[in-house]
Structures are given as C-alpha cells and as structure tokens.
Length: 181
Image (tube, rainbow, N blue to C red):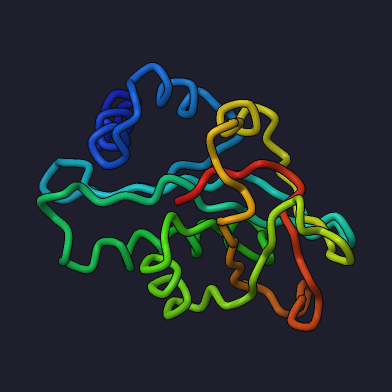
C-alpha cells in the first residue's frame, strides 16, 4: 500500500491532537525516516526516526518520535510491532542505539519492558554527562517549544550494537530540546 503524506498527517493529528499545519511541518523534514504498518489497505500505526549522534564518539543513532496506533486498533500488539520495526529499520541504517522521551510514567514503564533501560537526562542536567545531539535541523525547528518543562521529562535509550556503543556506566544527556513520544 502506498502511504500518502495526508494519511500520515491524519493519523498523527488523530493520535496527538496537533493541527494539520503543525504536523505538515514535521512530515516535511527531509532526513526523517517514517516507519508504518498497514492492515487491510489502511495505515494503522507509525513512528518516525530522527537522526542523532552521540557526540563523544560520533556514534549514530535515532530518536524515535511520534509513535502511534489508530485508536480502534489499540490492544492488538501494534505498538510493540511498530517499535520492533522501528528498531530494525534503525539498525539496518547503521544505528548503534535508539532513544526516546516517554510522554508519561506509564509509557516509560512500557518502554523499559521493551529494553529502553539506559536513562538520558535533559540538557539542563548535563553536568558530567556525555551529550546526544539532533542531526536534523528541520526537526529541531519543529520540536522547539517553550511550553515543555524539559526537566520533568527523562529520556530512555536502548543499545542496538554493543560493540560500537556501550554507555552502561556513563551519564548521557540530550543537548537539544526533544519532543516527547
């Protein structure tokens, strides 16, 4: 099935409540990879991969953003499936890790069960921490927000390639304002 930009925008708006204009700006970012699941010729789940970099060692990864499942298909394993598909896509593009910022505590627990166990602090908590930065200037502009309380959101990271990136004993922090998932 061919998925149009309007299909993606509609699902994003339905799941997150953003306006079509705001979301159109997000989907116009050229360096973002969109991952989708269709059932019966219908877009039912999607996520986006935003390129990022662990600055200390120039290891590439992806920030997973906009994970969603159409409301009438929730509870059928599509969330787990889209996350696994996103991780597979990131790894196939050479990523050593993926990370995200859960929208709330219950989602954080769900992500932890999926292997997102390494904490990543926000930019204003970076003392002594190694930085992870967005590569996508277009996404940085989209995600910029004065209304997000950045200290309250904690990121989580999952290593995809331990031979390249093993931050278990390191403190990590985002150096950019990142939107929550």
